[in-house]
Length: 386
Ligand SMILES: [Zn+2]
Ligand SMILES: [Zn+2]
Image (cartoon, rainbow, N blue to C red; front, side, top):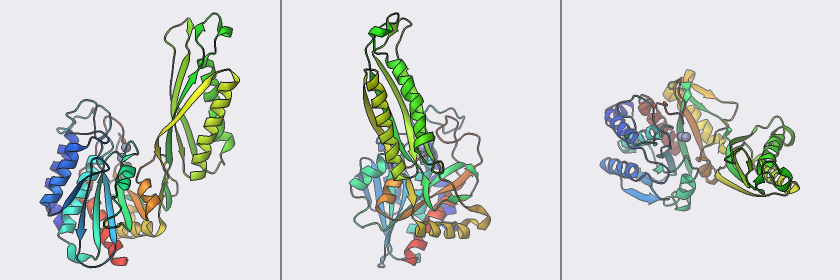
């Protein structure tokens, strides 16, 4: 396997650089999907395109009866303007592979290429899933809706994300909750505008908005058990455009994170109640909208143990860590794990100064053959154990 991957790696790294120079945002991954398809076909795969929009999948059948395991990579870039000096930096203004999904796509292609030559090492089938729109939390759900976990029915799924915080080649995962849920809230306060010298004749949405934002932090400190992490961050507040007019409207937006479904529901319910009641008590009305929703990512115990055991073999005992705390970021791999067993893990590419979602973030190509071997061996191990 190592040898096959070494032979593939220069071609795959070149492909990764091409993807990096030509980033595409969520649900617009047309050129990326076409390149993925072309590469899979070159490796000898039959390819299914257009799943959940721009998603791509391919199946490797060992010819022996057994289960079906899926490996997943995400393909979308971010609306960030790249500031690196890389020779293959983004050629598209305001678009950048700043989360390393180009690297994940390249890794899964390397695994697909290598596994095609190792069909005699396992039974059952391996399905490769190239997913659009992870960053918006809509790609996994769209592919599932479009039947990616059927025909053949997928029994378990695995995937990885690069980590700039971990040393190079270090595997990290966690039993149960690896990532928090996310819900973005957008609140519009509808008041009554007027002359700033006569506030009593207005319903001031700025004053009301600041009262609400203060009160919302009480959800974290007073409504949630101290040992269960929750996050409520307000990240935007917009209102007014001059010094002597009270505006009629104010808008604020932010994010909610939780690691249990119960706390996730509690955050949304309390936010709605507190916002509505404060606004109403001052004579305003509100509209509240939730979007960019991801459930918490819950790793399944048996499948997580399997990745942990494979990592010890592939990377060595000193390169393997079981985390005790969940990350408060989120990942739409969670949608697969709501449907079927599986596990998600980190692969270290650092430590690096610039983390994902930053304009100077850089993926590390050297992880591609290592992460590809991890994915391939996880799939082989799952199929041969079940
Ligand atoms: Zn990201
Ligand atoms: Zn990502």
